Image (cartoon, rainbow, N blue to C red; front, side, top):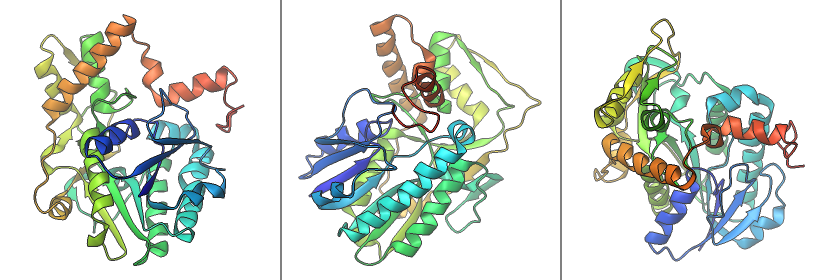
Length: 337
């Protein structure tokens, strides 16, 4: 079986490839990536194309399933590059879906996001609740979910995984994710600085659990009639931002926490993950936040040993894109020169 993974050289892809190999899948993994953030290739066969303009012949490889991770991910990038977010997250993704269906692909696994719930206060949001996306990134996820509702059928099944906020160790670490940032700050500064009061809610999920959900979805499309839209995470991992900082402080004892009490984050959502646990036959065992913190600690300390000093911006997606533009490697439209 051939599987296409888009965005395979990003944050999630390397962990996914490792987990697939551990499970000894009888599958060949094709990676398709623009390589903005590449450290090395995480695939059996690598296809280096801009997701906006990859050739149709890519689908001559007869993919059984497409795992779509590629996107301009996170709110700062979506706000700074709104036009490019539309090109990549929406237009290019629709083309990918159309080509996958046309060429006989049986399933399409889409990495969506719980950020589609936007501002919802203290009540947990389930899949039947109204979505309120506040950013270009979150809006793009809803648009593609709706497109897949139209395109999916019994021969082309879609699973939209509304992931909680990602965290955890990866060979291609990101430090622009809330928990990852806090752990890095605790290690390097012994200080965690919040850019808000910290009272906003966020559900969290370790990247390894995200990969487990993706693999399970590929293996269990028979459970889906046409399309499944599902929140992915654990009810035990809904946290206020300030409480996440305190979790990190409990492990890094000499760390201080500074908040900005007059600033309130509009993005605040608790999420109900009961449907996902049922999808997993009530057998979902998540990686605890404490374990995620310890794995991150090890990940970051290894980086420290290699370089003695870590360039924070190297692991922040928006900063990486800006650096490549400033050095004339990328155009303002985020195309390689």
